[in-house]
Amino acid sequence: MKPMGPANPVDEELVEEPRPSRSWHSGRGHAMRLLSPCKLLGRYLAALRVGCLAILLAGPMEVMAANELVVYSARKEELIRPAIQAAEKALGLKVTLFTAGAGELARRIELEKASPRGDVFIGTTAGFAELMRDRGLLDGFTSPLLKEIPAEFRSPDNTWVPISARVRVLVYNTNLLKPQEVPGSIFDLTDPKWKGKVVVASMGERTTVGWLAAILAVKGEDFTRRYVADLKANGLKVLKNNTEVRKAVANGEYPVGVTNHYYYLLQLQADPQSPLGIRYPDQAPADMGTPVFSITAALIKGTRNAEAGRSFLEFLLKPEGNRHLVEGEFEIPLIPGLHLPGADKGIKGLGQFKRPALTQAQIAELEPKVERLFGSALTP
Image 1 (tube, rainbow, N blue to C red):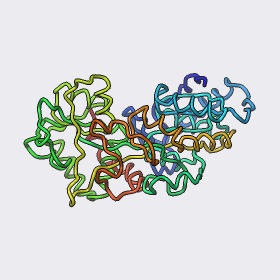
Image 2: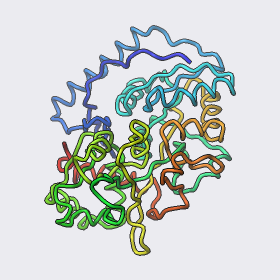
Image 3: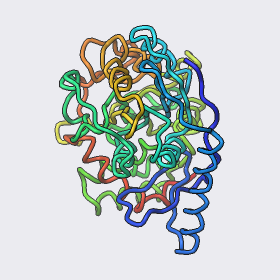
Image 4: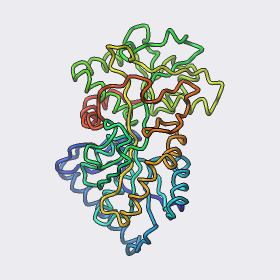
C-alpha cells in the first residue's frame, strides 16, 4: 500500500449547484453557503480552473493493472491501514491510499467526475453517502453478503454499503454522578437540574446531525425545535467535536456528554483510569431508543477498476476484512460472528438495546433540514 499526495487546493466552501437536493458538509464545521449569482459564477469558474490545472499537472491518466486500486478514505490512515493491508494480502491487490476529511474527498471526487482517479470511497455516515449519491458520484454495488446486514442499515438502491456502525450514547463522569443519577433519556437534559452541565459536539460532526435527524423523524419538527431551544436555554455547551466532548466529561468540566459509544472506549484506551461511564438512553418501553448510524463505503462512479473495487468491498463485508474496521475504531459490527469491541466495558451489540424504528435512508433524508433548522444553534 502506498499513500497518495495531498488533495488539490480547492476553496473550503463548495460551490452551490443550480438545484441541490442536499448540501456538502466538510466535517470540520464548514457548511456550504448560498452565493449571489456573480460570486457563484466566479467560484464555479475558479473551481473548474483548479480542477483542470490539477489534471494537467497530473499528466495523462495512467493505465491501471487489474490488481491496482485507488482508495479515498475519510478514516484516518492508521485506522484503515490494517483492513487495506489484509485486502492486499488476501486479494493480491496493490492499493494506493489517500486520506482526508469526507468533505474534502467529496469535492475532489466531484472535480474528477469526468475522469475519476479514485476507485473506492470509504466515508462516514449514510447521510454523507446520500449526498454523494445525489450528486451522481457513486456507483452501485450488490453482493449476497449484504443480506447478512439488517435492511435498515443498507442503501435502498445499493449505491453504498454499510461496513460498521456507531451508537449515540450518554457518557458521564463517575466522580460527579452515580449510575442511578444519570439521565435515563436525552429529553431529561432540558430539566433545570442539568442546567450548564451537558455538553455535545457541534454540527461539524455528522453524527450530531444524524442524532437530531432521528429525533425529527420520530418526534416531528415542532417538538424538535422546542427541544433544541430548551437545551440551549438550559445552558447546553457545544464543543467542536466528539473528542473534545469525551475529554471535557472525563476531566470533570461537565458531568454529562452526548456522543458516540466508541469515544467512551477511546477515552479509556487513552487513560484506563478515566472516571468515565456510559449510558444507553431512552430504553424504556415507551421511549424512542437511541440512534445507530451506518458507516459506509462505495464504488466511485466511473472507476477505472470496478472489478478490483468490487472485490475490495466484498472483502470488507467478510469477517476477515470487517474485523479490522470494527476493531480499529471500536465500532459495532453489522455482520454476524464478529467480536464486539468493548463488550467487557459495557458496550452492547445491536440486539442488546432499543433503537428507533428508522432506516438510515430516513435519517439521511432529514439531515439537510436539520442543518437548515439548527446549524446556527449548535455552534461552538
